[in-house]
Amino acid sequence: MCAADFRRHAGAAVEWIARYLEDPAAWPVLPATAPGEVRAALPAAAPAHAEPFETILADFERLIPANSTHWNHPGFFGYFSISASGAGIIAELLTAALNVNAMLWRTGPAATELEEVATGWLRDALGIPPGFDGTINDTASLSTLHALAAARELHPELRIREEGLAGRPELPRLRVYCSADAHSSVDKAAITLGLGMRGVRHIEVDAWRRMRVDALRSAIAEDAAAGVLPLAVVATSGTTSTTAVDPLAEIADVTEAAGAWLHLDASYAGSAALVPELRWVLHGAARADSIVVNPHKWLFVPIDCSVLYTRRPDLLKRAFSLVPEYLTTTGTGEARNLMDYGVALGRRFRALKLWFVLRAFGTEGIAARLREHVRLAREFAGWVDAEPGFEQVAPTALSLVVFRHVPAGAHDAEAIDAHNAALLERVNASGEVLLSHTRVGSVYALRLAIGNLRTEAVHVRRAWALLRAAAAPTAPDP
Ligand SMILES: Cc1ncc(COP(=O)(O)O)c(C=O)c1O
Image (cartoon, rainbow, N blue to C red; front, side, top):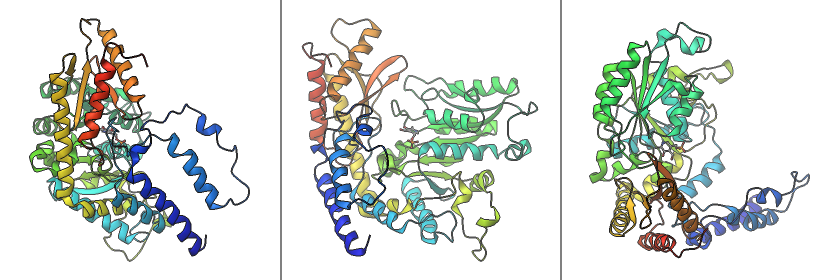
């Protein structure tokens, strides 16, 4: 593509993006598409000959947005809302243009050093101590996997890096502890690292869905008596189901006494520490060995961007550094090579979008938006409390409201769950909003997660109106 053609086509694409961002609510948040429809609309094989770019862009416009779930939609309240901010999108464009692969300092000096600077800025703004070193991964799942791999290096005498875990009956069983509400990425990391699902012990939660420290202490003691080695404790600040915040300081006491690694999954709630009155979400985090915060969740950085902070970068490096001859470099002194801090060799230049977003909003600009999201969530929670038949299923600590509707006279738990599942279908079928669900204990509950940059009071009011209408006894079945 020559420069003139590039200007023309990129200009058309940027124009499309600008129109899209002007009104992402022009699309239904959830597309009316069935599995296989997109595939069926596409040719079975790649074209043998070049196609005009206009045709490619026209097919994009025809096929892709209409069959996409619109995470940028202001009515997106499912899972944890995320946003592609303008600054982040522009950074992604420039990242793609540079196409840097920052596996070594030499292959990406600016990317390597900007990663250190941007994660350092974020760390300081969140109140995480300077001793924590940041590296960027794609997702929290990988950050947690890396943290637990580093935790294994607390025990070099087990020679796991050299010998592996398989076929070694002489090794103790290694165990990771997390709450019953911890994210499934902890279990997946255990599966991947060869600890197995039995290598994870889920600790009971209290009435606020926080890990029970007494239960953690007893579980570790019971395991120790059976010869199990406590490898790590994973605490969560902002659980997926209810945004519960585990009592980190007390968990740190137990973890330290057990000689285990403390990892904090703050992938959603960590960003809230930018707001002075919400800084409690990271209370005690200084005592963790590692902390994951996802700027792609609640910090307006386009997916993917997950920062893993650790005060033991030496152990992270010991877990992952492996340098074949073709990747050795000379003359770069102490410069950091990012490939040494994770599974992946190739590394996208993700720091650019974090840097752009932090500068384009300023930390106070981000804090003001997060504060407003929390205010909106509390307002919605107030409506739930005030409306007969609706109830909160968990406290609203941050920007997520977990609630359900119990029809008058309903007592059967399964019927109430089914009623709420149908309610969710009805509301999501509107195309105006998307909510998701969870189970809190045994109770099926709806989740309204506010976190999108473009969500305003009007969108939250609309969600509430749709929910009330869908819960009315006369509402049709989905
Ligand atoms: C608390 C928590 N941890 C981890 C994850 C996994 O995040 P990722 O998609 O970045 O792997 C999520 C996802 O929502 C989450 O809520």
